[in-house]
Length: 467
Image (cartoon, rainbow, N blue to C red; front, side, top):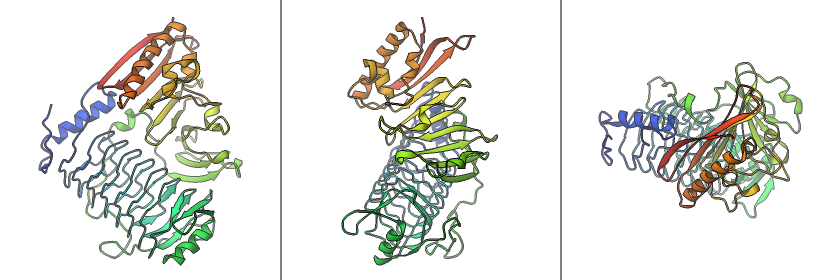
C-alpha cells in the first residue's frame, strides 16, 4: 500500500502513479484487485491526469487547480467542493459525478460529458463550455456568469437559481426544463428550439411557454438574446470574456496533445461508442428519420409520452447501443419492450444509478448490471430479493427475465445473495451487482449464472448452477 499524502503538493506525483494503477486495477477487476483512489483534500495542483481512469474515485475537496484532465474518465467520481479552476477538462467523461460546490472557474470543458451530474452550487464562472452536455444534470444554484455556452446541451437539466449574468449563449440548446430567468442580466447570444415546452421560473408565477416568450422575457430582464432560422446552424460569435479577449476560446494553459483514453474503454460496464455526428430527432413526428441510420452516429430521440433515448450506431450503421430511462405501466418505453440482438442498453432509473442490459446475437438477455443498487420497500414480483433490487419495470423487459431461465435451486441460491445485498444496501453501503447467464452447446438451455458483486466492503464472485 502506497502512503497517501494530503494537504501538500505532489511534485513528481510522489506515489500517485502507483495509486492510479491500483485504482485502474480496482475498476477493471470490479473491485477484486487493487484499491479505490481516495484522496480527499489532496493537493494535486497542475497534475496531469489526461486520459486517466478515475471512475468512482474520491477527490472531494482536492486542490486540482490547473490540472490536465483532458479525456479523463471520472464517471461517478466524488469531486464535491474540489478546486478545479483553470483546469483542462476537454472531452472529459464525468457522467454521474458529484461536483456540488466545486470550483471550475475558467475551466475548459469542450465536449465534456456532465450528464446526470450533481452540480448544486458549482462555480463555472468564465468557463468554456463548448458543446458540453449537461443532460439531466442538477445545476441548482450554479454560477455560470461570464461562461461561454456555444451549443451547450441543457436537456432536462435542473437550472433553478442558476446565475447566467453576462454569459455568452451561442446556440444554447434547451429542452423541457425549468429555465430560471432571475439572473440573466447581460446575457448575449442565441437560444435554439426546444422539442418540449420550457417552464419559465423567476419571473412571477411559473409558466409553461415557448422559446419566443423565453427570449422576450430574458431580454426584458436585461439580456440580449435572439434565435436563428430553424434548420440552420446558429451563428458563431466571439466570447467577450476570454482572457486574451480575442478569438474562440481554447485551453487556457495546456498545449500538450490529448492523451488517448485509458483502458477503461474496454473494461467499464458500458462505454459509449465513439461517434462523429449527433442528430436530434422526434420519432413521433418523423418516424422515417431512422430508416437508414448513418455509421458512427448518435441519435438523440424523443419518444411518445415524454420519454427520451440515445441510439448509437457502429461503423456499419447498425444500432447496437441504447441509452434511455425506464418507462412505466402507463407509458412503456418502446426501446425496452423488445431487445435487439447483440446490443447494450444503459438505463437510468434514477439520478446517479444505472442498469446495464446486454443481449447476445439471439437477442437473449445474457447480462444485467445494477450500479448502485437502490433501497426497495418490497422485493418485487414473486417476492424475490434480487428481482426487487435490480428493478421491476411494469410492461417492459425486466432484469427478472434472467431468473426465468433458471431452475428452482439456482433461483433460491440467488435469493440468498439478494437478501445479503439488500441488507448491505439498508446499511447505507454502495452495492453493485453483475449477473451473467451462460448456455450449453445447444444455445438453448442455460447452465448457470455467474454473479459478481461488491458491498459492505467485500467483493466476490460466485457461480450458481442451473439444475
